[in-house]
Amino acid sequence: MPVTSGIKHLDSALGGGFAEGTLCAIVGDTGSGLGVLAKQFASVGDEKSYYFSTMDSKEEVISTITRFGWRPELEIIDIGDKYYDSVLLRRLEVTRYRQEGIKVVDVFESAPEGVRPFNFLTFLTHEIFKIKPPFRITVDSLDFFLDNYGVEEVLGALRTLKAYNKRSRGTLLMTMTKGVFDTRTQNSIYALCDTMLELERDRVGKKFENNLIVSKVKNFPERTKILQYSITTDGFTLFE
Amino acid sequence: MKTSQEEIKSATLGSIGREKCLTGIEGLDSILGGGIPRNNTILLTGNCGTGKTSLSLEFLLHGAVSGENGLYLSVTEPFEKLIANMIPYDFFRRDLIKSGKMTFIDISAIYSRLGFKRDKMSLEDVDLLVVALGDLTRETKARRLVIDSITSIAYQLDTQEKLRNLMLGLSKMLSGLGTTSLVISEMTAADSSYSKYGVEEAVADGVILMGNMERNGDLLRTLQVIKMRGTSHSRAKYVLDLSTAGTLLVPLLKGGSA
Image 1 (cartoon, each protein chain N blue to C red):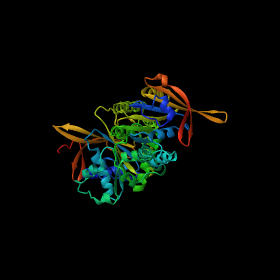
Image 2: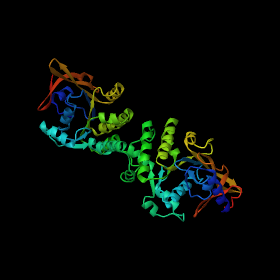
Image 3: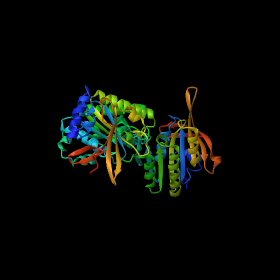
Image 4: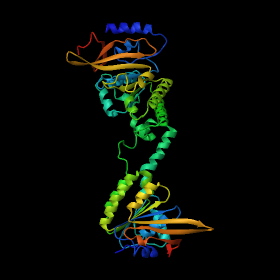
């Protein structure tokens, strides 16, 4: 049974929805509505929905979803918040020590040494492994992992997740910003995905022209096509 | 010991002008003509097990007892363990640590606060480390300082230039603060010079070499002052006797009874 994307015309373009066990990457220009599409996908379906957010806080995710009138029944895992606590906060502290100097009390108190650094990629993989099917999972966005870890490490984790997703007949959707990473990285991710969607935003005169390109559907190359879209109060709306 | 007292007399006469920092270690002060010239940075070098850490702890401890604050910066050993090494000494008092006469700091804590990458510190990081150590020296009002060891710090530095910068920066900063310091350097038997990289000994104001020597099946600890700017000194090899009363240095020919 195909799994609905939450967007009417996209489902029909894909042949009823995503095939079971699909790993889908949505790549888009900044401002093209990547995050909206991810949240629309995460708010539909009968299976349980998990949303790994690297940028938006839980409140922001819920607020966007309710603004569009979607169902906010999803489990949000806020990676951005964890990142703030375990990495950014420490970096802020480092700048303080570098700027203001160190006192004896600073080197005596607080954090014990030798604490295992938090690995967000391992965390993501581990958290997803704990999820029992049926599920749909959204990772918004992959940029965070590519920013913080090596391409090979990220690809390795994605291969594992792809296999788990396939076996569980789930749907795993990831977003990625276009043009931020080098071609080799992008192509490696494209090659790994079962389905690839691209969001393109061009300015034509005084208007934006938005295209959603179905650029890869594994085993169904005839389903690739270009659709126009706009984001309305209902979310993504596609035109044939 | 008559001989050493006589030596002190003659040595003190021989070195004019420069104020000395008494190590308090019996025999060493006489070899050095009254002690380490103040504000100098001395490289204390030797193979493992030759007593470098014990000697430097004793140096700090004697200072603390006579009212001079000391700072021990360690990379290799947790300070609980270092403190445990001093407990056997008759003149050790726990309140010396509580009252801040002696402060022990783990350098790796400084690394993590300043966000240094363990595998490669930049030149800026090296400068920041010197500044941080300066801040700590000032804050603790340390007149004696021990770094244990420069070799461990050097592992984080990928060029000799950085090590040179570190040594020069440290010695300049410490000298400016009026702090006399012992910088421990770990050598292996294979090393041909007095320090791992050769840079350390060139920059230091003095070099004290500690070693092991086998005699009649016993392993003796030895000490030799190789170089000491600002004072005339003996370059003979001495034998170390560790006792609860402190370290005792005796000339090699007479020593070895232990």
